[in-house]
Length: 256
Image 1 (tube, rainbow, N blue to C red):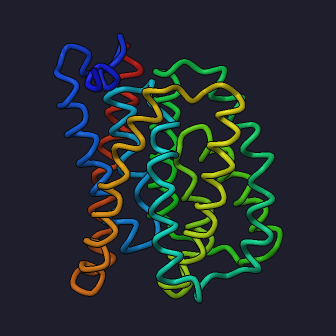
Image 2 (cartoon, rainbow, N blue to C red):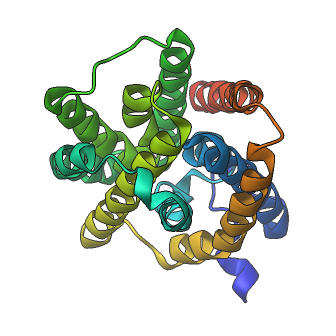
């Protein structure tokens, strides 16, 4: 049965709970993350990855990487004129070595350890976001951010923070469009590399595909909220949710 594919594996938080509960909770996280990312340019991985890692770490990072591909594609269709193509030309190739290293990390770490890595990555992203220091956009800084994004995005599905920090003071349309172009290329690289490395399973693919319609709904809702809710309010709300999720991941990893 299809539901059997969604049944959490041993060691997951909801192993004794109906698999549809897992889908409902994970789906809500994906929807919320898509709304935030559609509004401010980043957020889907930050919101959904900790929740999914907490519920069933064996789905990470493959399911999230499959799910996130649609959102940057929709954003590019809408705002492609605002892309910083020079930045993309430097950043995308730089993601390749980071992607290779990320595949090695996924191959070595157990799901629970990988979930803890997601927690650490999210908390680091929150700290850097709240710090809001400014880095000049140069070929060197873009290459560095691209490589770091390739590593973190492939290993944890959270590849947004390095590039988001670099572009955070640019105009909102430029931020959303440039990050979308980078995420679309980067997620494709990461998925291909993980597939070649044998880290993508059938249940991972099914879980990722099932969540894709929620991303489309989140994109529409994000467009509606963009003109009605302050990006700062959305950003603070996102940071609060992901911080709690990340702390929960780390506590669970410590307690076993």
